[in-house]
Image (cartoon, rainbow, N blue to C red; front, side):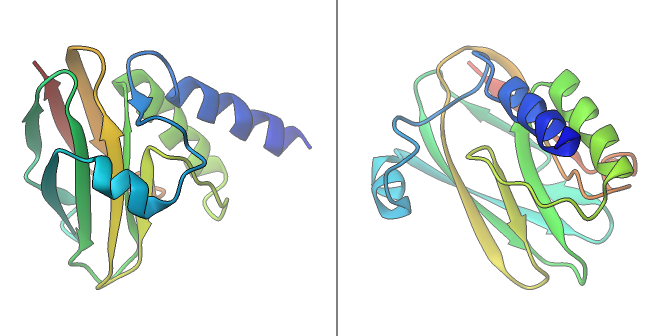
Length: 147
């Protein structure tokens, strides 16, 4: 019960006004993909890096991130503020096998591809990170600049 409450608090923090998912989260992935105005490919590797590690978008853009795991271990891409990602990374260290899912994240098995469709409604800086235990601390972080 306590674990569910903590997870709920983390996910609510990730849904802050700084980052907002595109529209109604109950629609099908195909509808979300069709709404994207731009596609950006992000690769993840076992060297604990994202390529590219910095992405610029315009406020109002709806972006489809195609997230490719080029490594041999599980990786994920989670979009949020640096404070939110750090907090979530610490939580994942304490609960490394915890299952979690939200519109701002894609868990991608080795050799597989995932996607996130996100609308950027506020200008500023956001980040993306891999919150698999230890990956964020190893430098698996990228930056999103919303112009």
